[in-house]
Amino acid sequence: MFRGRAAIVTGASSGIGRAIARRLADDSVDLCLVAAPHDAADLDGVAEDIRSAGVRVVSIASDVGEPETAERAVAEALDAFGRLDHLASNAGIAYFEEILDSPLEHFDHTMRVNVRGMYLMTQSVGRAMAERGGGTMVCTASTASFAGEEYQATYNASKGAVGQLARSLAIDLAPYGIRVNAVAPGWVRTPPTAEILADETQWSKHRSRIPLDRPAEPSEIANVAAFLLSDASSYMTGSLVVADGGLTAGYRFSDWEAVPTASEPRAARRRP
Image 1 (spheres, rainbow, N blue to C red):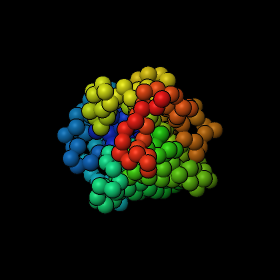
Image 2: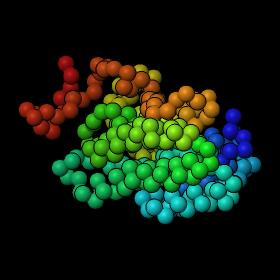
Image 3: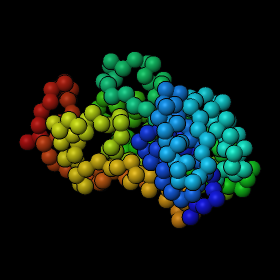
Image 4: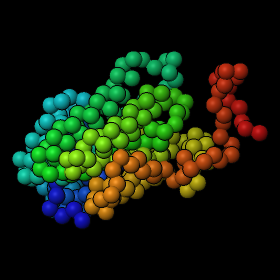
């Protein structure tokens, strides 16, 4: 399906990004892996592991919020592989905190990585793909792209932007033979969610809202991303594909604690 092709994967040092890289490597895709400088050691480990699959790999530890990072990734991919067919724009961060206590720096950092980083990477890769007759992109959105949730204002705002940017890119880039889609995961077993998943009291409340009764494994999200990058999704562009175990399918009544209201600020009360 992918043999002989090349891709850039951002946020590749762990979690969903690492799983996407591994999934593409299993299909013989040469890879340019990008992650933040503080994740350089983990990125090197991922690159070494993937080389064992017999594909060519270059890795870049650099801030996706800097224009030079996207330009460098494109240049190194083309230099190493002679082509660039796919982009998985996955880099993202999250702060979980009440909006009244959230410093502006956290908002700026979230937008820099989640939105600006995606914008810069898709723009640079899009230019390269347009010159070469097309390609495919997948962006990592979230169920947070569709609905708000307490303590996630900055993250939800950024993921809403990711979803709309992916749709707009699909329209703008279609004339160049470039398809753009997004995968919207719910709860996934990754380093940022590890603390909540390990706390049975917290996790049981979240799990009660998921019909499949568990979080996704990163490989399950990677499978969706690979499908959206592949020729098997050739008539799809501008789609946000939800992979959330049924979380957003509808309401489920459970022991989930109600969100504090104006009449009961900060008070946790159970549904009757």
